[in-house]
Structure formats: C-alpha cells, structure tokens
Length: 420
Picture (cartoon, rainbow, N blue to C red):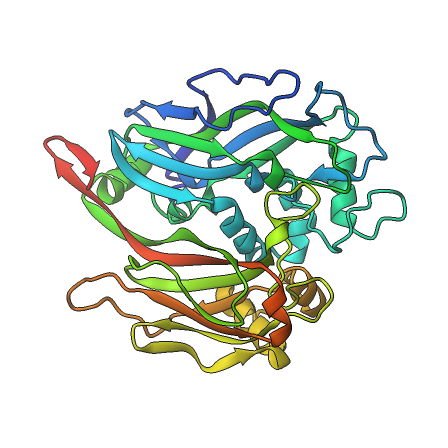
C-alpha cells in the first residue's frame, strides 16, 4: 500500500553504475566474467528493491575477431537474460544478506512455472524470454524452433540486445513485494555465466557474448507526510520475515541404473525440490542446449530412461507412492501445483504434455510435512531412483534445485537498524 496515493508523492528511478568499467575482450578471448560490483551507499532514502532491475546490453559475435554473426548462421544466444548471471551475492556493511550460485538454472525453472502464456508472449520479451519449442537449432525460414529463430533475429548482424533482469526473480528480493528495507548500504557482487552456457549452435565456430552495458536501476520513493508516518511505523523498527532461498546441487557423471543422490546435508527447513537429468555430453558444449533436460530420455533415442523415483527427507518419503515413467502425467500434474496452477482457470502455463516430456521434464517434490527439528539440526535429502537397463551404457548427470525457508532479521544497533 505504500506505493500508492495518498502515501507516495512520487517515484524516481535511480541509475547505479558498476564500480569498475566494463572491459571489452580482445581478439580470440572471452570477456572477463567476474569483478562486476555495485555499491549503494545512500542511507538517506528509501528504495523499492522489489521493483529494481539490472539493465544488461550484450552483443553476439565471433570470438576470433569480434565480427558480426550473419543472419543465416545456425546459432543464437540461450533463452532468457537470466542466463547471463551465474551467481549473485548481496552484502550490507560486510554482512551477507543473500547468495545464490548457479542461479540461472533455478530461475529458468521458476520462469517456466511462473510465467503464463500471455506474459511470456508480451512482458517477458523485455527479459529476452523466447522459449524453445523444439530441440532443433535450425534458424532458417523453415525453422521449427520458433524461440531459437526469434533470438537469432534479434542478435544477428551486430545488433545490440537490450534486456532487463528484474531483481524480484531472485528470492530475497521477491520477498520484498509488500516490504521495504530500511535505508542501508548494499553491495552487489555478480559473476557472469561462461559462454558455453550462453550460446546454442550447430557448428564448431567459436562465438561469444560480450556485455556492453551493465546498470542497476532502483526506484527511489518519496513519501507524503502520511506516507512517511506509515513507513516509520512499519519499516523503521526491528522486524523479520521468511523467504525461500535457492540452492543448486549437482552430481557428476554416472552410469548407475539403481542409485541414490545425496543432495547435501545442511538443509534447514527445505520446502521444495526440483530434480532433472541431463546427458553428460550436454554440458560445456556449444552444440548442446543446457536448458533441455533428459529425465525421460537419457540417450536421445528413447531407450534409456528413468523408471521410478522418490525423495527422502529424514524418515519421510515424497511421494508416498513412487513416481514412475508409465504415469508421467502425474509428475506434470504435481509440478503444476508448485504455484497452484493445477486449478487456476484464468491463466495459461507454458508447460504442457509435449514440451514437458521432450524438453523440460522436471520432477518436483513438495515437502509439506517437513518441520524444523527440535534441535535445529540441518537435514539431509536423498533422491532414490531407478533407470531401465538400457541406461547402463550412457553417462548422465543429475541436478537438484532446493528451496529452503530462510529468515531475514533486522535489529537495532545503537541508532541504526542492521541485519543480523
């Protein structure tokens, strides 16, 4: 309510620049992926961090000499501006508020489940969101992968791609939808993604993504007298709230047909888990799309596949009856319920049976019965699974995205409010 009249006098977006200037790579080199930092030291004004965003402009070009990519080349950047950011760390006066590593894959899953069909066709285009609808990389006039072709047309011929990355897709900032942080210093430390996770192409010619502009835009709020009273009473006092923090885990190449994946051992209050398999060859390779998953087809010819699985947390198993290959519709049905879309009749979703089975087969577990232990000790998650016999001859990798419930606490220290 603080964002509207009669509480808000006006909103003005403030632009923050990187601490160090962007360095363009020389011929035959990739761009530096680290040293991208923003430092906000203004403690006199309120900022609406929920509606903040990164502006990132990039160019798709040849690695050898920076030449433009011609229009008929069968290549394009990977879907989504979020793919540009590999990790994000946020601190306040040296205290870490939020950290997410390999966040690009988790946000891709969240976008699949959160964006409606209409949103993905309109507003999401500001985020370079052109979802793949086919596994082919062809970008000619007869291309069946419409998302690939759209991204190619926007990035070929030396065009600068302008994108926006809303901070509210990262869980800490998502939790600020109805809250304000008290004025405090914030430091952002960002690592960009490597180029083999950013480019999808058919041939072996090396290309690169070069960031040309990287800015942070944040709404600065100017309140009326009534609004300032509201803010003082609600946001300038000790407070705490909970949010779902993203954590990514990875299991290296395996061939086991009947195995278990221990997903870390330091989970406090795990709430949601997403699992997907990938062929080993699909990582660190320009000719493979790291956002195509292979849970139901581990070899590309539909012979090696997942048979059944379930998740263990403590003494509880999810689901009680195993998921199995012969009833994939049940897995999709439960996945849709992550955002309660299963019974939402007013907005369409991007996932449906065909692209779920072939492109985005994600297994979802809602840990509804998990409660914090009496001792507060962290818990270990185990993913139990069995593949059919044909999978013994194929290397695969396993990925797990875990959303844990975290608590954010602000307390007074002298005359200031600080994060503890």
